[in-house]
Length: 205
Image (tube, rainbow, N blue to C red; front, side):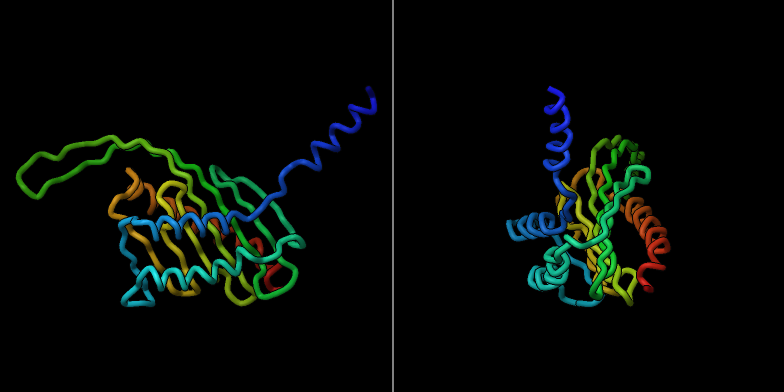
């Protein structure tokens, strides 16, 4: 009996799922949504005529990150507010740190709708739940080399390749997304700046 109790903690330890980067999963699901008839339009600061093809080509850069062997990376996790932050620090190569930030957000707000014609404004209450995942990659020369933002139900929302910024706007948006997204993006941008300051000594090594 004593031997059984001694073995059980070891079994629990070895059967725990190792932390893994979810970027591969999100890339596949987001691209599948875009290819299977989601109605959207793309804005791209570096391409006057963005398309699904150009977006697919861009995502190959993120695929390279998803394919990295992280078995030797220094993994850590922390939570700040509703943000669960997972970090992988790589000892070799140009890529130094990969961040995965998962953020469950509950929206409960009242929006005022105003009309062009002479009608009194109306108020509408919006409640919804969102699960955002943000990926950010720091290299030895660029604090924010890659950035990828997705939402569990909506799909890919935005990504950044160096200085190029791309946004995907859906005609059938999840209710409340337009209300919560600007605030979330600002919050996660400030969070990344804080994390990058903490990691600066590692990147410069």
